[in-house]
Image (cartoon, rainbow, N blue to C red):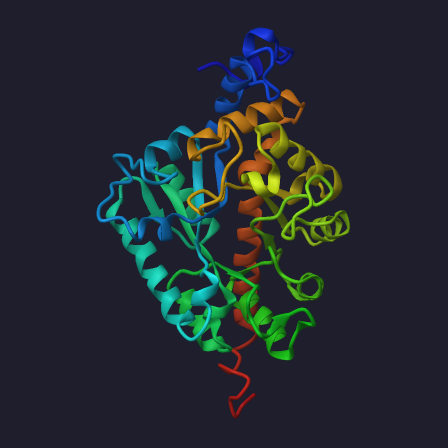
Length: 363
């Protein structure tokens, strides 16, 4: 296989590469080949997948053979050079009431059963080290989360149980203790306990006062698993430049979603968001969030998980370096997980678990 640097870097998109009237011309075959070579060394860590819920209604499926009913299966993950995948356990609005805990446990059970049924392609992981082990064994690493904050049900004990079952990311939307006023005292205790457990906070869609307080309080970097740049495309979940700067200072991640609604209708639109986040927050702050199997419409040429090389090829055409692309696809996510693992080990040596709920006699 040719070395990445042996392939010409000066090829431009010309009239032969796409139709003359095409407003979104495709990148050349040479950039695609460079992208695939780079992704072989630095695969994609995809920050948000709705696959478990998408599989729920299907009577039968085989992700290792291939499954046309969803956007994600093992052959397409390998074609797209995806090395790790965060599986969302989030709940629709109608399930965030009395059944939130039970519904989340059912999602956890489903996710674990799906991985168990596909041992040759998928592996459930908890730590950054286990992601590397899965990759070395030729498996796609599955990280559980984000789950909805409603699943915690005002109980740190439930948070600990969810973590013991593999949960690594918790969304801070939809909780009484994280609202437009910011975090309550119990909400602050949730963040401390998440740090102690190694559970990462997902702030996509959270009110700005919550985001401000968590950025100040958390000892580990935070994630925005589905947030692009508001300056490029206004959307409630996209981040202002001021918030991007703060996220970069905290060494958190803005995981840009590949959805037409948030990022735009074509590959160059997504690349515009990635360019903007890289410039404003820094290359250590940007990552990718496919948002496949969530029901969202995706940009042209990014219809499923096999299409990541097309996005990376566009970034190569724009002059992104191999180092910047390795941070985008793999290293930034690994860094955040390693930081959470390290902080959790240190915190567990310093302090015992907090009381389960704010109504505990010990609280």
